[in-house]
Image (cartoon, rainbow, N blue to C red; front, side, top):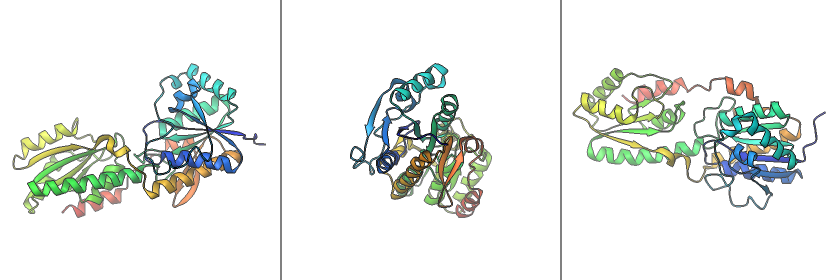
Length: 328
């Protein structure tokens, strides 16, 4: 028989993503609806270790659904990686009579939650919140759609100046280990080339592609580069290489950086966060634990942490093929 859940804790961890506030709001209001106490922990696992918390209710989360960032703050905790750190966190949860946790974050957050749940038998459910969209068990993560729209808007503006000055722009987007943002925004913005960690294009092929673009009459070009691309040590080294080998190109570099994490979340991200977090609360009340909640083919599904963390959420190969065709 599943234990009775009277108090649910919620935290945001790892890199922030637009829609995390919508997720916090959904947890707090679902708890209020089911007459369950909700406690928010500041700065992720570190807040659990320090007992840094607040009580959340339906009114305390008003007007945050449209805000970027996270009212609970976010951080990475080295201390939580240690048994002593997790012991402190467990002690504070016991003192606060927290029966279960909703963890909003990425794979590092889920790994920490899985270990913690196994060590202290606390019910934990993960909600995928990361702009990288690199979590298996869901088609979309909270914040990904907003990040795509932010990048597209930036590339469209850069395209205007690239065309005005006949320039080649290398635009670096986030994605240290994943090319989802680069691939989708590259196709959406009509980039001539897209460089991602999953596909090693090679310098020779890149040069040949740019030469082909030049021969076809293109006076400006956009190359979208995921920050984890393996062709060069970094985007600036890559730009220097092209300048040396293709002196006819006037090369510029734009690194979009953390602008991709900010801004008001799109309707899609607000709705996704709301759906996932209501389901997370309901699943905890039904006795579920050690799972993540995700959106698969527009249906809310549960995936075990073990499966979600082991499986590869690979990029769409069809988009790569389409990119090659459309960049002609």
